[in-house]
Length: 226
Image 1 (cartoon, rainbow, N blue to C red):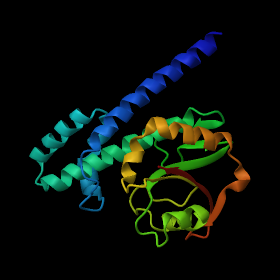
Image 2 (image 1 turned 180 degrees about the vertical axis):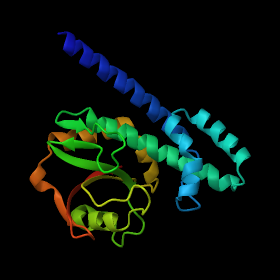
Image 3 (image 1 turned 30 degrees about the horizontal axis):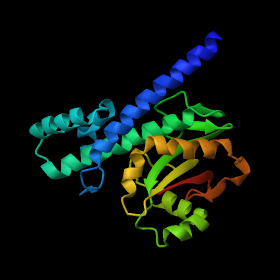
Image 4 (image 1 turned 45 degrees about the horizontal axis):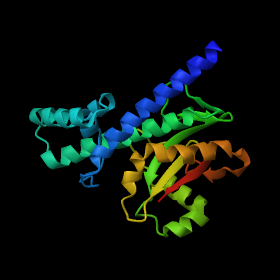
């Protein structure tokens, strides 16, 4: 009985935290969905404060402070930091949604960049991404041919610190009005999609991808569309 009570209390706490993150993420919506420059190690190092800040207003103040210490273009660094923060905390929230599900186990080493969790013993890195403009086919084609989009995503991933060719789950967000990025903040809505995916997970339906190193990785796409 005590174990059950503890579990219920933990789940309530997790929901409260996720609700807070969702509310803070949505405060980013009034701003444009632009980057202005590719990610690089110098700007990453100068904006790593995003990992320790959940509140949007605190983030804005920290960006202002950082700009006073560097000669960066104000607009470019503002959006660079804003986007990193948004993507990071959305990813953390979505990862938590997975870990809350039965048959999903978190990776014990939080610094393991190749794995976030395992489902039925199969480890995955999770990547939430907007439907890419660079993919040469439309969204309807991608849904019918997920293996084509998966191969494209592996091939065209960033070559930075997050680059790897191991097992990966892709949560692909697509909005009919073109504002795909906003769906990354719809944490409560994404919960039902993830619950359904995990409850119907069948390892034999995973898509095998032969990477550029001739290694086979297992992958799949969860479609988040509105």
